[in-house]
Each structure stands twice: as C-alpha cells, then as structure tokens.
Amino acid sequence: MILSNLRRCCSYRTATPCAFIMLVVLLVVMNTGRAIGQPKTVAEIALYQGADREKILIEGAKKEGQLTLYTMNTWTNDVVAKAFEKKYPFIKVSSWRSQSMELLKRITEEYTAGRFFLDVVETTPPTIQVLHKEGILQEYRSQELAYYGDDVKEKGKNGVYYCANREIYISLGFNTKLIPPAEAPKSYKDLLDSRWKGKMSIAGSSTGVWWIGNAIEVMGRDFIEKLSYQDVKVQNISGAALAGLIVSGEVPLSPTIFDSNIFTAKQKGAPVEWRPIEPVIANVAYSGVMTKAPHPNAALLFIDYFYSKEGQKVMMQGGLSSPREDIGLLEQKFKKSYLESRFQTLDEYEKKYEEWQNLLMQLFIKKR
Image (cartoon, rainbow, N blue to C red; front, side):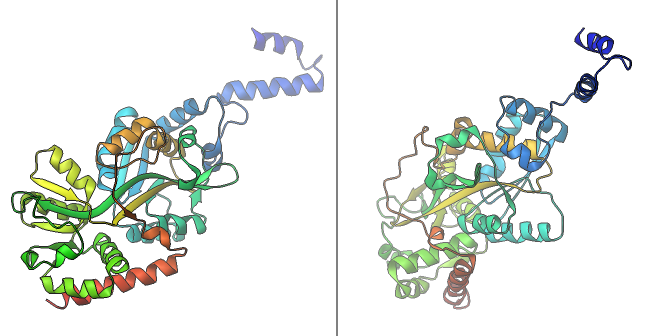
C-alpha cells in the first residue's frame, strides 16, 4: 500500500527530486532485504551492537554454514565445539588442536601467505599477545563480556581484542591402583624419594617444558639435576595423552598432568587421582576473532556462546575453571604460578622456553 501510494505521488511528471530519491532508496532497501547500515565487513559485524544483532548473526551464519577454530585444549576441541554445533546445527565446526607455539606458527604463516582460513583462536598469553601486536586479532563486542573482569580482558577503543575463557592446572597425576593416595608425593622434594625411581614420566611437549621452568623457578636448577637421577622417562606426547597412560597404568605417576584430564577420567571410573604440588602451574587461555575471518557471523556466535553462562558450564564439566564472575569458580585452594604471564615480550618468553627445553633434553633424554 505504501509503495503504491509513493509510486502514484512520485510519478516522473509530478515528483519533486527529493521525493523521487526517497522512492529509489526505499525500492533498493525492499528489493535487497537489507536495512541501511547493516554490518557487512568483519569489523562491522564484530563491533555491531544493534537490537537485531543476534538475528543478523544467525542469518549470516546460516549462509556461511561453517566455522574454523584453532585451540590447544582437548575439551574445547571436542566437547565445547560439539555443544556449539548442537545449539546451532546449521554451523559445522572444523577445529585443529596443537601446542601454542605451533598455533602461532601456523596462523602467522597463513596470514603472511594471504590464506585466511581461521575464524576463532583460543591459546595462551604469549601467543595471543603476539597475534594482537601483529594486528591479526579483530576488536569485537559481546554482551557476555560484561560478566568478566577488566583484569582478564585486552580492551580496545570500542570493545576487546581478547578475553580469558578458561583456566586449568598442571601438577601430579597418579594411578591409585599402583600408588595409594596416602603414599603419593605431596611436594617437590617428595619426587626425589628413591621409591619413585624409574616410575615417573613427564610430557615431552610444552606441558613438560613449562613444568621444568616452574620447578627451576620454585626449587632451583639443583633440584632438576637431582630429579634427572630418578630415571624419569620423557614421553614425546601431550599432557592429555600422558594422562591416558596413567589411566591405563602404563605410567604410575607424572607431575605434568592437567587436572581436567584426571577429572574427566575419574568421572568415567578410572582409578586415578590428581594432587596439587604447590605452587601449581596455572594455564590460562584467551580467545580472539581474526581480522580476516571468512565466517565472521559464525565466529561471533561462537564467541557469544563461549563466554555465556551456558558455554562456561560446558567447559567446567571438563574440570576447567571459569573466569566468568557470576558463575562461580571451581574451588582451588592451592597456590598458583602464572608462569607464562610473567613475560612481557615473545622474545623473552622464547628465550626462557628454549633454555628449559634444552635442559629437558640434556638432563632427561640425552642422559639416558
């Protein structure tokens, strides 16, 4: 009705220039089905805060149909991604899990080559900081970020570049059929007891390297050298895979085990236990959206879900702690060491990491 009246009033003979322009604009809007000012670019979508934001994201994500996620966490890679797909069945999540340095290498190589596959990344402080400094992370907004403190966000002019989404801990995991809880080590010094000679393993991945670094920070280089005489085996696998060997009993105990892996194993009835040997390494993860995200609508939907109370509860089912302020953290009464957060630059972090990695090689691998 409105359109027909405008056509009659705005004929070529009688229409004023202004009325004719208004008619053209209205026809364009109605024919394209897009409101003026609706976000189109990655930046516009990431920072859009209109009342129709969710509707726009869902419509856009249905057209995109997929999302690519890079993460270093097994639970995020599997359970969280599948829970998101269940909530939004029109989006297929393609995820890749690896260590933080491998994630950084792959992302920077892709961007340098002009190959833009990635939408959302979840990784450690040094890696996320480098991605931000390189201009690879897109500033974004989400209504869910109101429930997170400023100390876990990297703020921009209009939103954030990244925010913490989980926290897990590395310490002692052991098989209770092989080692009664009352006899298991309770401190770093206990690991030097002769009864554990030949029974311990440490992960050869970044998890093991971090543990070596933390042990040096806490106990000194002399402790690590003494530990090397305990015939500690270095398993060239991730901390998560090593936890599986503890579940099976192939490895009696290891100080390089994530609490979340033991938590989920115990839920399935595995004879395992996790014990905090203080100070425990706290592994914090942050998430960000890529500036060249090929599926920006799906990416923002995932970010909303990731930081929502629903998404955080899914993560906590895996034994992970949530930084969201209104959900309540899992009780962790032990002392924590935020090892990675101590470094201000990637160069500083890489130098120390290489030093710890060389010690792992010299004292526990070449020595054997």
